[in-house]
Structures are given as C-alpha cells and as structure tokens.
Image (cartoon, rainbow, N blue to C red; front, side, top):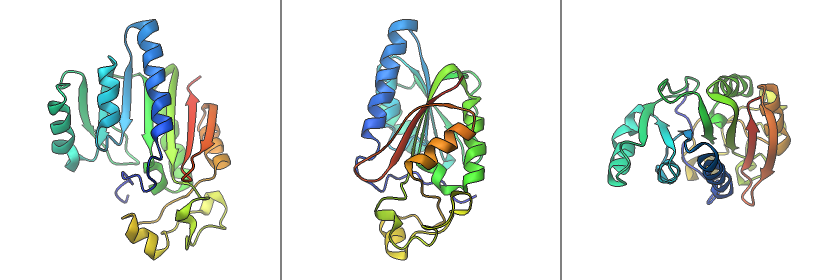
Length: 216
C-alpha cells in the first residue's frame, strides 16, 4: 500500500476530537485509576504525551522510519516508561499485546489512503483491539472541503471513490497518492458497517470529518 497519510492538511482539524479523547482519559483515570490508549499515527507525539501525562499507558504507532523522531520526543518529555513506540503501515495494524485491549484508540486521517472496503476492514480489526466499552476516535479528510476541488472521484459512489487529489492540492498538502474523501454520513456508515456503535459524527470548520464510536 501507499504510505499512509500522516499530516493534517487542514489546520487545527483534530483539536476538538483530541479534547474528547483527553476528557475520556480523565474520566477513565478517575473511575479505574488506569487507562490504555493507542494513537496512530503518532505524528508529532503531542496527543500521546498529553495522554501519558494524564496517567495513561500509551502506544504511539507510526511508520518504522519515524521511530527515532517519536522516541526522541518521548525521551525529551521524560515519558519513556509510559509511552511505547510500535511500527505499523496500513492496512497492517500495530502489535503491542502487553497493552491490549485498549480503552481508547485514536485513528487519524490515514484511513483516507485506503479504498473504502479496505478501510472498513481496518476499522473492524481496530475494534478488536478495544476492550468492550472502549472508544474509537476517527478523523478523515472531508469531501466537502478544499480537497474536493479538482478531485476526480468527487461524484463517485463511496465504494469506488478513490482517486488522486487535484494536482495543485496534491502538491500543496504533499498527498501524491489516491485517497477516499468522506462526508459525515459516509464516516457514520463506515463505523456502523465495521460493527461499532456510533456515538457522534461531526464536520469541522475546515471540512475534516470526525467520529466517535464504542465497541459493544
């Protein structure tokens, strides 16, 4: 598969979703005095570090070539005991059996690098990494955003909506490969068809689509 999308092309696109993640972590720490979280991709590691500072045991998953960068940030934050780096590349998932099942899984943007049917399989597999009652937080790139300008699959049905961005936007956001862009309803159906109970979906000001689901 192509390298998963790990950059956020829409500024501040995940801030609200991350707030929900942190609130859930605080709630679980109060009730159970422990929580575990999987963040993929780890990116700049800000969310993993915030979760660890709240007391969670965190798996920070990213491409193998980003190990040094992620582990350097973890070491600088003094959280080497709380955060473990695990490599992955979609559609394969990270493997850290010592921390599974997780209370919280955060899956950010990289699903868009997969065709819809494969993305649904990935979400189904991700749900198996959650304990019953655990929550999945997902963000995807939106069809009703700047990215749709020049997107060849804009009118295609979801099952076949997989194409490169327009050349100017592909260059601007460094997303050279084909992507599947989502509406809010599309993400709802993805989570539902994967077997999750959907708690919330929303579209950000910048057009990112976000969802929160629970394993039942």
